[in-house]
Amino acid sequence: MVSDNKSANPMREIRVAKMVLNIAVGESGDRLTKAAKVLEQLTGQTPVFTKARYTVRSFGIRRNEKIGCYVTVRGEKALQLLDSGLKVKEYELIRRNFSDTGNFGFGINEHIDLGIKYDPSTGIYGMDFYVVLERPGYRVSRRRRTQTKVGCQHRVTKEEAMKWFQTKYDGVILNKEVGAM
Image (cartoon, rainbow, N blue to C red):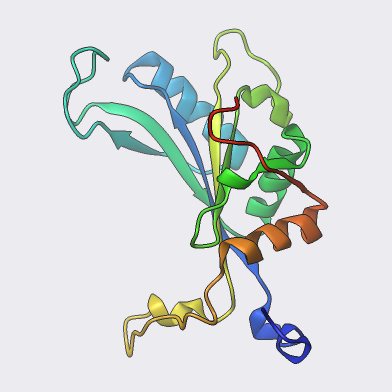
């Protein structure tokens, strides 16, 4: 995999680029605005609303109707929220939670587990956490001038992301099968 002299390189360190918190309500109206308030209370940022791609009559949603909201968090705040979210999951993730591009995501059922006081008028919302990992130097793929690809040796793989999670958070990765839930 990576030899000892490569692992000592500071450019090889894996870090959290951003974390996305998503609440998919499935309907517009009062529940959606309350979910947005929960995200704003949690992060201190105003959430962005997501719209339905197309009409699904059985779900009762129309095309372009607002059905969810999300917030992108970066920096120290992202690490704090990630730590509190993993604490709810007891630092246990499934191998399926990790993507091939070196990112991972998980969900929690109740937002009050994160330390927010329960408010009966708001209710309880579940949310998804999605964490994007990167190494220093990923800017080359996003900058405006002389934009280029990140080399395959420098990309974060699924195995590296799982190793990072295990070492940084002393996490446990379970090998659950797809059908066993």
